[in-house]
Length: 174
Image (tube, rainbow, N blue to C red):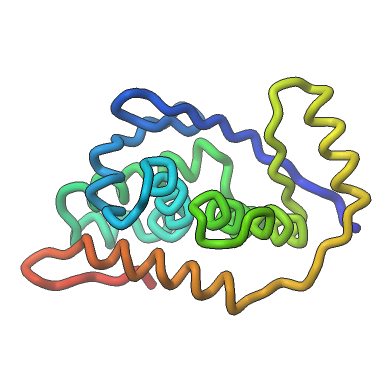
């Protein structure tokens, strides 16, 4: 297996906001933009799945959007930078977020992310993290199920696009 990379992501839930690596995101804006979500955490992970796309197109999208959708689009670049996302790690990050949002089966997003060389490690102590990393190095990773991932991503885009628009026009994310 190739070398495994790690990302240091800290997510905290507060009364009115979610924080990721020091960037605050309003729960109100998440709920307004992802109304179909069953919980604020689900909405947050669906939003995080879109962060790489929104961050890349922030200038174009911000001009077309208003309200909660514009707020979330403007936050995307800050989150992208705070997490340390780049072209090499954004796909595995999105796969993990798809799983956390409930759009991929439990364990599937992390497994697929490993195929790209990124491990999601949830633990509080250094020993927990090292133990988890060692066990991952010995695990076999299955084939990438592109149809499942594509269907989940398309559904998130579809639901997000239903919430945005100005003058009746609904911009899409390309």
